Amino acid sequence: MTLTHEPAHGRLGFQLAYGDTDTVGIAYFDIYYRWMERCYSTWLFAHGIRSGQMAEDLGVVTVGISSGCRYVDTVEVFDEIVCQAVADRIGTTSYAVGFEFTRGEQLVTKGQMVFAARNPGDFGKAPIPQRLLDVIRTLPEPRFELAG
Image (cartoon, rainbow, N blue to C red; front, side, top):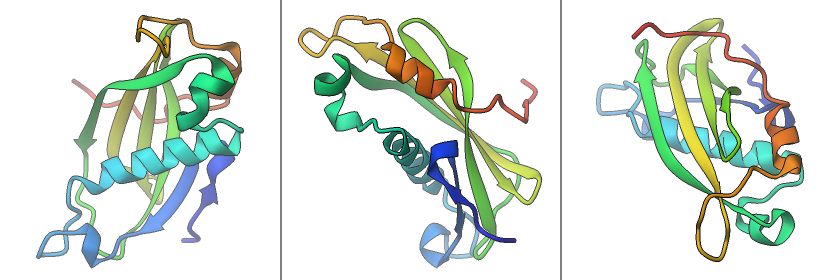
């Protein structure tokens, strides 16, 4: 498999090393959060948006309000994984970005991060700015649905 790195499409690939696993070589649960954040940040950056500069550039800040991960299959050291960001839900003041981790065409983990737009001064709810909405809408729809 050729590792994919296409930040503008919300897609990046990586190969696990021993630092990503427990003592028996199985992926340690927290690696997925690092890769979700990396995928999200580099995708925004590829579209000219930096989280740390949103207040100045867009007039809002975004705050993470929830996150989660469902582990579907075992991932082991040296497995090659692709993380694809997907548009799970887009509201008026918040949005959910899903992360589909695949080995080949098989889903191994599905994550999600939910962000809310807030006014920088008082952190009151704010509408998602059009520029950010346009970027969020570049993400593909989810390919995989998990039951219950």
